[in-house]
Length: 340
Ligand code: AMP
Ligand code: MG
Image (cartoon, rainbow, N blue to C red):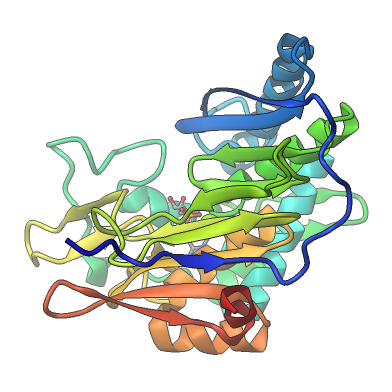
């Protein structure tokens, strides 16, 4: 048997601080946002792990309080459930993520849209009817109006005063970008706690900084859409984040059409994406950007997604399903330097 050769993605810039002497890697984690979180930190043997854990848990709870679509008490849910014409002062984190999401909507021509919540709900991927419920009936795509530009434009947001106006029935969904934002926030919190090297993961979105006691950066394996890569990818997360969007985790097979219906919705058609792209992975300094862009490229599909990745200089890996069940991989130009 031959061992597959690993694709090793090394950041072009390996930097600065040498590993702290006597440090060890500690790991702790838990559940958040419907998935697992895990943190690896370099610290002394008697590092204050419980204090660090509590600080991380506070950050995660804050992001949920601000942006969860699932918690009816979150600021986002209170906005979604509010009557037409109501004005809402929103917290700083929510405003930061919404601003980034609206910029991505603009750059992606509406493929990425934080106003797509009602469509996400209709397809069973929101907090209400679930695609996992045996009684769930997927909607008829013809009967579902695509998210109109006018409806989305009805969202009036003033970033200076952080005021948001509910035009009526508009449901925000920041799930495509908030996990990455939470990873960044946890990283900042760990730095503030004086930790020189840490790896943060929330449900497959990761970010790492610093080096481990052996001088190595944080190496992680890329998620694969199948049981495993023919050629596994490993990345050194050194001041770098990675996020993957795929059609293979949260999805169902439409009983009427036999089509795969994944949780990535194309707001321009009102239906889950219908192209052979299985996953997109984006590397970026900001995990929020990696997360949001991975979703945007996943909506756009192999050709248009690659065009946007080129235009935005995004380091992206596209994994495309072949009719024979295999996968083809395409690297954007900005990813190529990581492989050389
Ligand atoms: P991700 O796994 O980061 O690609 O995020 C997927 C989630 O983003 C879905 O479960 C929806 O809540 C949300 N979503 C789906 N389609 C879109 C879209 N076109 N624009 C923004 N968010 C979306
Ligand atoms: Mg995303």
